[in-house]
Length: 202
Image (cartoon, one colour):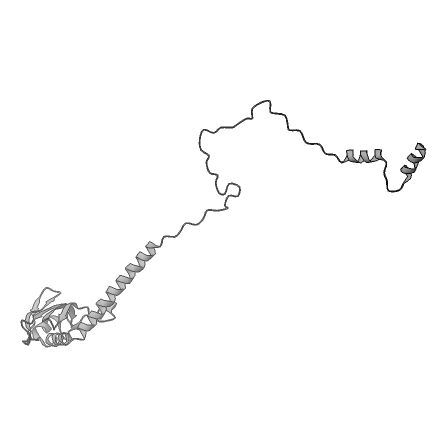
């Protein structure tokens, strides 16, 4: 009877024997990992006597060429400033010279020079101002002409058919409303002769 029950229970479909179920349980069981054994010797520690140095930025990939140095701009600015100042001074001198050439004082001086007989003996005929090539053929007048303040002091080169010389003219006005008084009106010729030009007050 007992044997029949055992055989019947083992043959029932969907029911596993007890012995096989225990085997399945044993197969899925997990075991805890054991801790590693303690080290038998102390780990090696590397000590440094100084601080560490920073590594270069291009340690692995150095640049192919050095970066270009920034160009210095102050020499260019200095040259441009010097050229600008020189040009401005030259322009102002040219404008001032043109104003004196077109003044009534300059025309009156040249009229007196052309009419002076003593000066014609030294310089000859056709006395005129000596032109300068760097002023486009105009004479160079040095000094100043200031009729408002009553002060005229100029000098320039003249030449004629016989020779040339330097003319000096100085005139002042003592008070407002009175005519100018000529203090100096002469021509020093290149041969050394000094000619005093006679003229009426400006």
